[in-house]
Length: 262
Ligand SMILES: Nc1nc2c(c(=O)[nH]1)N[C@@H](CN(C=O)c1ccc(C(=O)N[C@@H](CCC(=O)O)C(=O)O)cc1)CN2
Image (cartoon, rainbow, N blue to C red; front, side):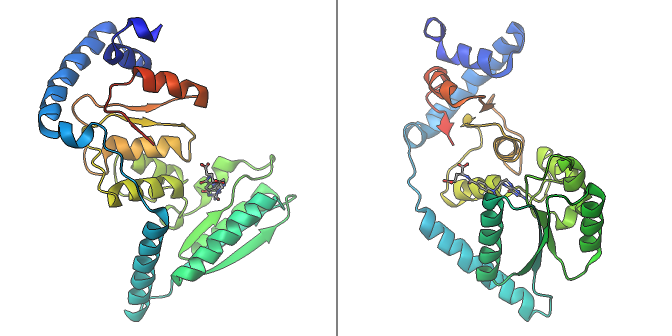
């Protein structure tokens, strides 16, 4: 089906389901920007693949954060402290929390984990969060997900003080992220953004294909790329989210050549 339509047209058709007139307007704008961009960047962007050493980048980031933390403390500030709430005995959740508190410790950030049984009531959990919100010793706070079925995850995420919400799951932080304002950004999207930034990959004016659309990963990544943290995208570039891994081939096949995959 896609083979009979020009790639550019079909990509617009798939991405947004807009009216034909709207599509044509976007298409015209896109073509104009395409020719400008081609003129300026063709040799750089066309098939540029950037190989990144994750290990080296992680080491560098560790060093920077360790230094920042020590400077903060040397300046008379309290050592940052991470409060973690872990409900139930899901082994994966315990592993994730262990890794997070270990990482905190390496960075010079102290932490403590409050364990609660899976029978904990929502009210008790909200009370605990409220107490930790008001505890001046706790600078950042997270509740490991998933939670047992009888607890409403959104209520818990929204109970965390937005300024302590290191996961960036509070509705205020999500809203700010969508508006391109400074906010707490969920960890995996923040990491992806940091890799792109540190690798010097220019995303302004580019079309980007985001593989996945989960609310804690794909969606925030698309939002970060949409605003580029500074400005709204221009030049008709679109961030895609696609629903299933099997469709990736179809999207890449119909996508214009300057699509990047994440
Ligand atoms: N409070 C939170 N709870 C949960 C979060 C979170 O960010 N905050 N995320 C997940 C669990 N999790 C961290 O806690 C987490 C899970 C998976 C990954 C990840 O990068 N997965 C990779 C695969 C990694 C692998 O090779 O195993 C991927 O999906 O591509 C990061 C973080 C739910 N709970």
